[in-house]
Length: 169
Image 1 (tube, rainbow, N blue to C red):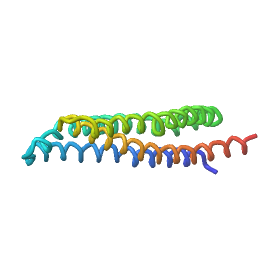
Image 2 (cartoon, helix red, strand yellow):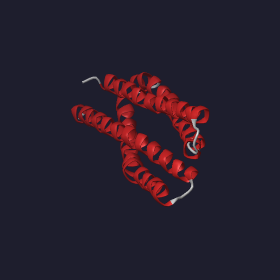
Image 3 (cartoon, helix red, strand yellow):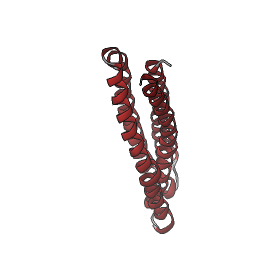
């Protein structure tokens, strides 16, 4: 098993996943622009800012993750060639920490925020607050879906790292 190939494949898959943040951020911005241009009712116009802000948030998150991931993957080969066991140990530590973060964020924090958004939709009477609730729910759904897939991919990568470690002993 080539652990460097596994690490690089994981990084490429992660980049593809991250590109969905960027794509959906752009779609949210286009949606906000569409509401600005074509929204005739108060409720439609209430979506302009919440959806646009959510789009900027998704776009910024995606771009930040994309460039940090690109730098990380670019350093895999050098780190592996310098000291393979140390590279694997640091990857295992990073993967464990990230999986723990996903368990908290994607399965507790994001759903809780989405519930707050849903409560805004149900209990707030002003269209801008209801539109904000819709934008919050949609954004948290995007984060939850993408992060749950990333967590599953990371768990598979950890299995490969563990198998490499056990084969080295």
